[in-house]
Length: 218
Image (tube, rainbow, N blue to C red):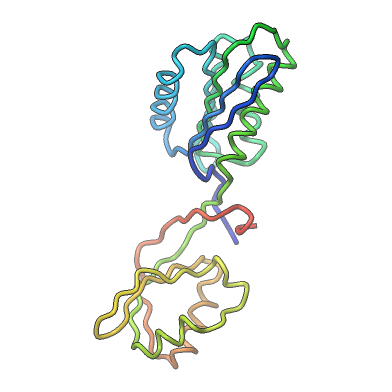
């Protein structure tokens, strides 16, 4: 399944203790720098008594915006490694804030890098990774008998995730919204036309992006 980019599946949080310091990773899918900055402000307010609140963001379908701050940690030991982790995972439109409560033991440069990147990793794992998949959208109306044939038809496994039938309304005919990936459009239309004996029309609507689990999109 072709996709535009990978991003976080949801807002999430994870914690770990390293050498008595508590690290709290809060991650959030975002679409703009403004959304990311609002998210960072929210987390700073929530953990205003923390020793550090380290922000990092990667935004844009080509990862055009990459920014981070060390927030008082030694330069290059926290924010930049988090950005590198996000990029290496192929993720974008993501904001990550790592909150640290200092536990009294210094971690050293290497220890800080490991602590911040592993904390970000935990947050990303909790959020999950999804793929932004382009779908073409069609409004369809068919007779009841044809609709029943469609919903009971055993489609090939290759159609799984590539075709979505939703929002059915039952009037004189059954109308529904058909979403299909661009690469499977002709195959889907072909089978539905065959099932209906040609008594089906596809009224094209606005294309959209749907987020599906990364494993499904591979």
